[in-house]
Length: 212
Image 1 (cartoon, rainbow, N blue to C red):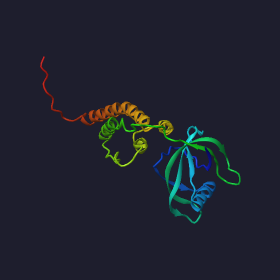
Image 2 (tube, one colour):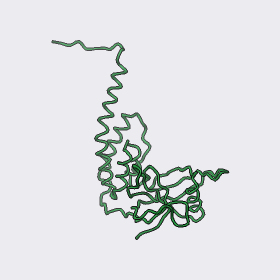
Image 3 (cartoon, rainbow, N blue to C red):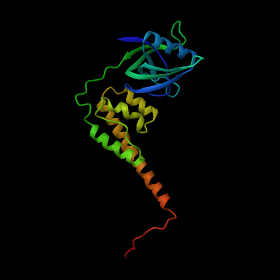
Image 4 (tube, rainbow, N blue to C red):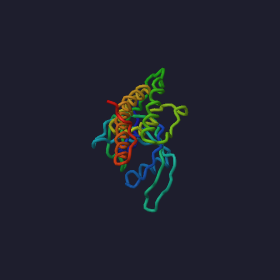
């Protein structure tokens, strides 16, 4: 079933459940957000990559009007709701300043064991964060769709983040993240070894004598 919604295209990927803060300053988007606040309706953030709309995005709703400035600008907090596929794009919508279009909301495919790859994914995340000396800020036991909550935190390109958005099974998303981490972790580990060699260069070292 198709639905027409307003669009706020951005050069980033938003996931369901994600909190996103927006500074709204263009007249068209001020109109959009004001309508969403007054009518309690949602809008869509289609991903804008390489100067085009590849086709997927996320429906969001405004959770908080944080600040309204005298000149009409706004700071708002939004939250991602569900993924959509873009069917038709209109710029602008009739009688509006902003763009919009018809979308089809994506229903997740059946996934009997959505977290079957969670254990190997968590072990790789722990290894990466240990190498980077970054504290973890996620709890895999508190929510579903764990992949959405960490995809911005593992060094994916925007194209890879977009690919995650297009996958409608959690297990598939987790597999893709594991493949990415298997490539990234050796590179990060090698960088850390290089940094350690640089730190040691020029310092006195305790060296074991070699026996020939």
